Image (cartoon, rainbow, N blue to C red; front, side, top):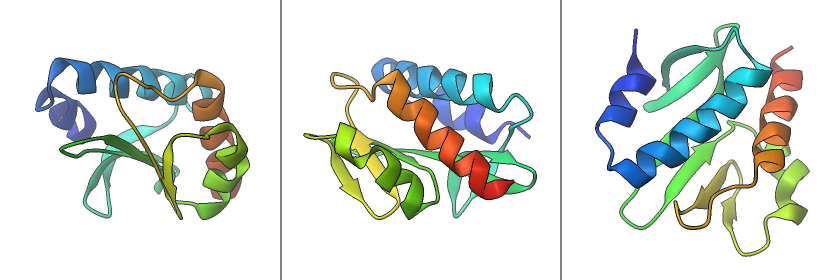
Length: 113
């Protein structure tokens, strides 16, 4: 199943590049992660559970760690980014810092177990 690959292929080059970088960071930490769908989003899944979802909107990109706790772990490092309970929004011009992505993924991996 190639849900993430297919979704990324449908995006414009800047969005695809931004998400590809985030995916690479996530896969460094979770090499066993598999492509799939979670809650209608293209997502990486670990042990059958959603690890990180991806969604491009008209004015922003978003990653979904499927966990309010994961967002809370990095909240203080995301001044200027739009956050909600389980979502971090950004743009290709203002990408998420690598350490933030890694910490989101680490937190979620700990929750998945």
